[in-house]
Image 1 (cartoon, helix red, strand yellow):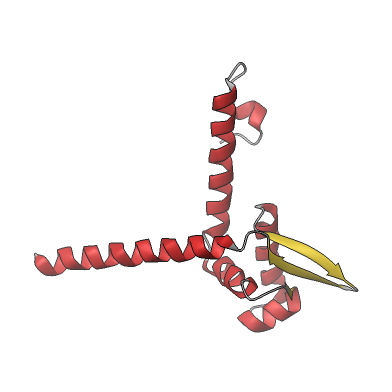
Image 2: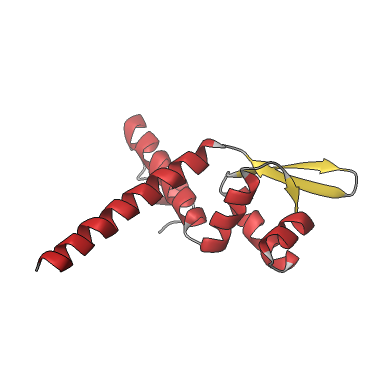
Amino acid sequence: MADTKEEATPQGASATDHVRFEMEELVSNMCMALNDPKRLMVIWALSNGAYSVNELSALLSSPASNVSQHLAILRTRGLVDTERQGNSIYYSLRHPKIVDAIDILRGVLRDEVSRRTGIVTND
């Protein structure tokens, strides 16, 4: 996959093609950010408000360096914001609706597990 839009979109592509490419990139980037259980835990924790790395580290029982790496990914992907307060940086969800989206996906997964379990038990 190309690193830049110029490399990935052919020269002379229509505005619609360009917008479609942008949307695909946004979706792909967000999904990649959500593709880690620890990052999902960070998002879930941030749904309760802003936290510093050390607070999240304690809350998630995870090393601060690990939490910091996950926060950096979430920040680059546009899912968290930062705010400096004195010497601390506090992280918060940029789009709190992301928690609703994750809950919807969890519901879809539950339905799929139930469907597959039903298929197995009905055989």
